[in-house]
Picture 1: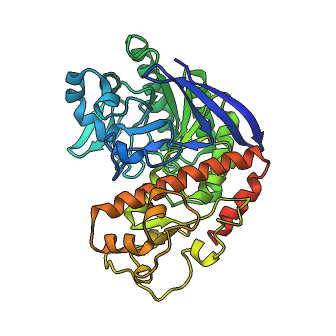
Picture 2 (picture 1 turned 60 degrees about the horizontal axis):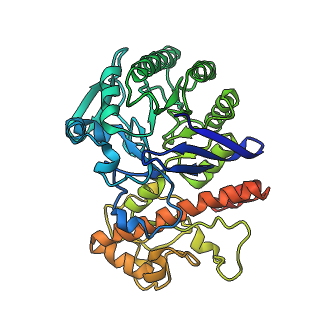
Picture 3 (picture 1 turned 90 degrees about the horizontal axis):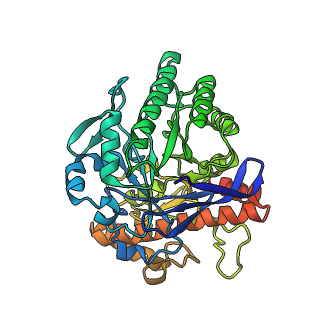
Length: 415
């Protein structure tokens, strides 16, 4: 099974298109790009049940699983015999499995020429290509990020380490492809090859060219997560990599989710993102509050700029002493703050999510301060909904020739 990406429009390097692939259930699934995947932790969307998820419109048809959280459950899944999809109640979705969880990347320094280490709740697990392939046989997902040495980050590493990451990753890719081709259950799965090489353009391009020669279904631009390093250098590196990749296969990136950063990556040819950003916003007790309506409806437009920007000076302090304000972005409001105690408006004016239709900022503030579990559920519904809508707006903007207008609107809300 080889996924097929059909592009309908390319503006600069921003690509509009549809990926078609056959899901486990046998039904035809399509995924529009640019787009995101449904982030899960151990097979479940954070804070939500699968029933609650039905309250969110436009949920991506591809669910993102992480090997680091599932590897220790291999024996259980082998005994179950029907794969993680059915086990976790995800039978009606296409499944993609990355090696790491973008929210909690693996500590560096443990990979070797023969093994890649992943960290689950039970500690470190060393994966050889053989163990990796047997794990995938138990999981039975549709798209598989191949085993790779992803420790050489794009914000700096030695030339020797960057070269080693590429050599190891290509070696792992070749061995895994060979093992999977000999396995009846895995030979039809889509393999996503990782582009490594740290911050060295020559190594990144070598990785891209060599990976593209293999029978992979798509590419992961690995090692770009994290806020350190020069953003412009990273973006130049991304643009150089995507220029080397075949146009008919999707490009993934993990750990980049802030709206302005997403727009920058899309502009440089990236197609697919994870949806860890709305989860991280939820964990901060915050709600996404940015607008992505580049042609606003005057009835529902958010007109108060101060409500869009969380960066205004306020004397209000959070009621949670442990709250870390440094990680809060300009695209969210922190509902732990005292100023929301008697604010009976929805989280975001004009938002049609379940939370905004039924509850107020004051209520969510009360739930957060009382440490009620419902706070996370309501915030997750709102934040997922906003994020999925944002990607829909991006696709519409490319289609309408308004991508730069939307990019400028998103950028202004961060300043």
